[in-house]
Image 1 (cartoon, rainbow, N blue to C red):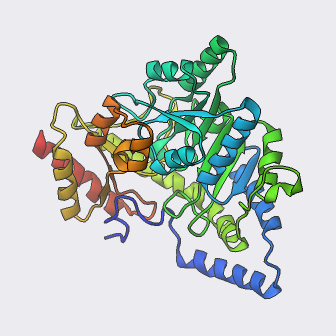
Image 2 (cartoon, rainbow, N blue to C red; image 1 turned 90 degrees about the vertical axis):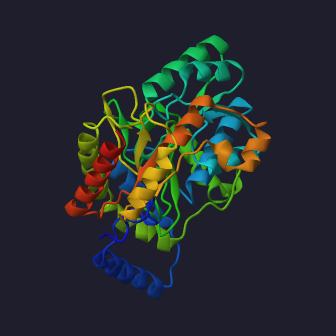
Image 3 (tube, helix red, strand yellow; image 1 turned 30 degrees about the vertical axis):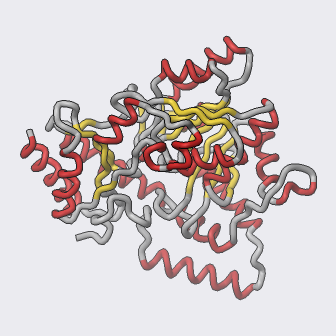
Length: 383
C-alpha cells in the first residue's frame, strides 16, 4: 500500500522520486562549490518559469503565502487608506490570524449551505457596512465562483463610490480555473503557497503573488528586499537552495496536477452514483478543480455524527482522512475572542459534515480502486 495513503493530508504534496533528488543534489553541490549563494538570478528564472507554466503575469516570488498576503494588504492600505477584510468563515486560520495581528479589520462571512462559496447576500451586507477587501479562499483545490464575486464587488463599488479590492488565496488551489480562466484574472492580487503539503513545494516553504496592476509588482519586489532604500521594506527574500528545488518542481508540477484531476474525476464519477456523499463544487458548470484534498460532505438526509464513524472505518482500511475545514473561530481562540465569538450557521453545519480522503499523485490505479470501493461500500452500508 502507498506510504501516503494513511495520511488525510500527506506531509509532502508532490511526488519526488530518486531521480529528482539526485538531480537536485548535483545542482545544489555545483552552486555551493562556486561559493556564490545569491539567489537573485534563480528567483528571476523561477518567476519566468512559473509564469510560463501557469500562464500568469506579474508574478513575484515571496517567502510564503502569508507574507504575500501581508504585502498585498499593505498596498491596499496605501492606496485606499485602510484595509477592512471580509472572508469566508471556513478557511485557514493562519490567514485570519495574520490579518488581525497586523491591525487590519476582519469580518467573517458565512458560506453557502452546499459549498465553501460565500453567502452572497451576507457578503453584500458586509461590504455595505464598510469592508473594502474581499479575501477569497479557494479551499482544497475547489475554486469559488469568481464571476459572482466580481459582480458583487462592482455593484458595491458603484453604490459606495469606493474601490472594492479582491484578493485570492490560492494556497490550496494551484492551477484551478473558473470559466476557463485563471482565477487571478478576476482579482487584484492572487497569493500562492509552496509549503511542503501543497501541489508543489520549495523545500518546505515558499509563496508568491500575482498582481493585476504591474505597478504593484515593482512595489512588492522592492518591499521583499528591504524596500530598495526608497519604500516600505522587509527581508522577504528566499534562499537559493529553495528556488533551485522549485525550478525542478516546476518540471513535474503540471503532470502531477493532471494526475490529481484524473483521480478526482474518477472518484467523482463513482461516488456521484451513490447519493450518500455530496460534493462542494461551485454553482457553475465551467470550473477546474485541482484536488489538493478530496473533500466530501455527508448528505443532509443522514446524521452528521456518522462522519467520524466513517473516518474510523476508512482508517481501519488503511485510508487516511482529515477534517481540514472547521470554521476558523472553532479552531483559534485568538480569532474567536477578537471577533467577539461569531456564529456562522452554514459554516458550523458544513464543519460537522465534511471530511477529506487521502489524495496524492503517487497513488496507483490499485490504490485508487481500493479508496473508491471502500467509500462505496461504506455508503451502501449506511443507506
